[in-house]
Image (cartoon, rainbow, N blue to C red; front, side):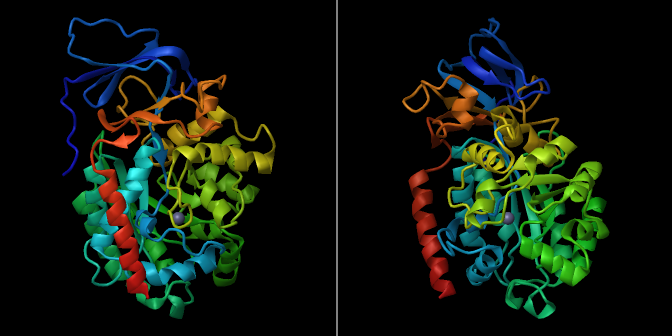
Length: 461
Ligand SMILES: [Zn+2]
């Protein structure tokens, strides 16, 4: 059952919290308040909340807690929750070749179960809005996009579902096996249908659709071009993988006679309505193109490390004005599935690459909140704690054993262990309380995910 919007007159008051608003000025309060009315933030400020005659508000005493905007995930593959822990020591292309046979056997029931696992892990780690990239549609597998959307609705996560695709199989010079790809005409028809059926462009939307051909090495040039045309005709965003590995760059040079960014430009894939996962191998001229066109980047530090892809030049991108958010990536290349820990991982990998000032704790928090909101085109609605924005909030407990002696609550969140999540509000609803989902039975999800993983492994032989 879908989580319903809260009553418009329901008020929740959070007081005595340290607050990092992540607004344009980086305003923080050592001890402040936030008032939520219905599904929006009514007020935020220093000190206690103004008293109101209406005593019916729910009050949360957040002494010892840090309140941040809910985190925004900009890249994922929810179905991979049931193919974790495989191909542990491979680079991207070998890892993909090892996993395609399993992925080619998924169906709507398995995808629903896997999406429950992925969405639950995101919520439990502070994520309130997620984009997912689903690009495997085996013949006869049923309504896979509908299945993941249904799972996300049950748990109450704000969502951008990407209708992904692959049409360049091995016999066409691509990487995936031929039986894992679809025909381009069928893909375009299904993409248009997904937008017509699911996309809600209204303010406060809980569900948007994006179109997302998978990567240059699994998608034809025609499909890249026509997907962009379709997305622009329908008014939805575009997403893909770009410049993830050195092998991909070499593939593009051989196949198209140019590097990945020039290729994307040639097929109409740079622009404010486009965001790409990884972008590890960008040179100065590529970064300038991303900045000039407003093309967004989903930085996925754990996945890039797990697959030894390299380190994206996030500080250079930020300095140039490129929109950058954080992504978990699929959990076959980042088994943790947590977004909260990516704040820390982003800071650490960028410092290894660029020195101690490469990324501050505040910049890491901004990547995971406002940065992601901008990448998904929702910077006016989510990503910061400001009056009028949607009530997507994460309340972290930082007075326990692991954090009470850390001098700064934001450092406790970004540099320390991921703090317990006292509460997570999505659209004004409390969907996590004391670290547990309020919308579903976690043990039941765990059991069904274990069975689904085994079932898929058996199917793949
Ligand atoms: Zn990915």
